Length: 317
Length: 321
Image 1 (cartoon, rainbow over the protein chains, first blue to last red):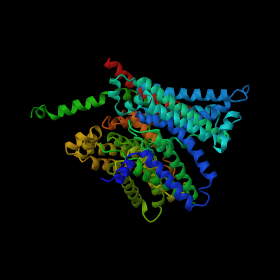
Image 2 (cartoon, chains in turn yellow, purple; image 1 turned 90 degrees about the horizontal axis):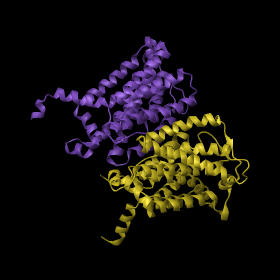
Image 3 (cartoon, rainbow over the protein chains, first blue to last red; image 1 turned 30 degrees about the vertical axis):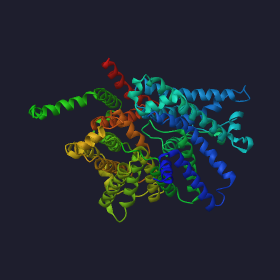
Image 4 (cartoon, each protein chain N blue to C red; image 1 turned 180 degrees about the horizontal axis):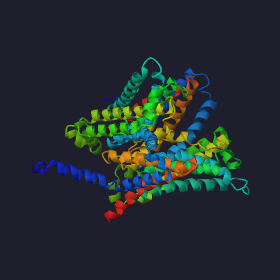
């Protein structure tokens, strides 16, 4: 066994690294073959879009690692984006109060999801699905179906500002990524999440509270969806019903492309990061190829399948 | 062999009653909603009213069977909705053209079976998670439907629409046929193998079930049912629409879970799933007749789904204590 082949084999065993290399390869090839793809402005734009998916997928990664799933992230994003302009008090010119209130609501919704899953024993997939349906109805009642514009100064800064030439959203993503990675791999709480996902019974017998960790996880997922909702609102400057819908399936796809097992117990946010960039790049490439909506949809689905073959395979059990 | 001498029919009845036990609450809720519906809208007891009611229920019942079948086998599919759309689109484009009505039906059935089988092969033999394969598949299938028919249109022969969606309970009879087909299928080794492979893949494999082949078959049958639901929707609306099926994906999962089918395979029954789809369908109808705005329907639907799943769980927990 020579060292090179061992290294290559180790590489293929590490999905996060593999996904990172895939992104680098796609960016390199696309920059060399497509005019304008490699321009700094375009790559920065791709990263800005990835930041939104990456932040939503932060909560989703944690939930999936514990063996659950959150189908309400899209609805929570929409709730935050529509409620924030409505609840930002005019007396506060900085807009921080509005952001805090919106994040509190998003976290509260996540907490409700967790309570349903933990106390009522509703399977997470159905609890979060019902929550999404519920919120969808509630929102149309509150907002009346029209778009609301944002005047909150902090939100607009977040969506538009570029300190040192780096978009504020990307900086926010870096902060989120570092904290999630630290929580997951450097704290007892992260170990508990992984233990619960790998074997809930063994984890409970070792004294880990399923109830408390479920509550914390879904609250975190709600919080990160809320953060993403604020970022999207800042980038769009308008909130409307349905603004968060595209992020539900993309967040799950980013997690799985990053090598996290959909069955829980195995995975890392380090894979989700390149997963999100890969998804956005794929969508951008498909938009460049001037095709009909039908072909675009077929290409997107086939590419996800192809990428899955490389990084998302379940080990034989 | 003493177990066999106990008489297999007694064992059969004992197992059946155990499988019905958890569904008691669901049956009561379904009957209550049906009575409410009859009270609100007495027209349902006529043949025409009954036909219309079952026609609204039929496609949901078919996709719920398609979903429950896979969930019992330990899988899940997120491409039910797009498959319904594809079935409708193929029916609407082929029936008026070269294929004729029967050719159109055959085309829908063949494509449903084919796409289901391909999905199953990818999931079983390439060992990819079903949820994400069918998610990617839903994009591909939607794309194909959009290529065939970019905007709603096409043609369904008038007599065919009248036959399926007229004032006769043909849809209900077809549903009975589908249920009978499921009963027959469960009496075969393949049907039992499907259940067994969902409950305990290793145990099923050691008992001689070809787990991978059974999984491919489950996906193929599921695809067939979803595409046929699309055929019915096309007959009902008289045209094809490449996006008409989208709500069916989540509704099929909700109906199956309402009916007590679990996500981990082997847990639940098909009769429960069909009852779940009936409950969902009646619920939507009742709220419509009560004049709920569509928005309030969403809110109520969310609450009822959580309630219907949580209450049996909580009572079971209390009984255990």
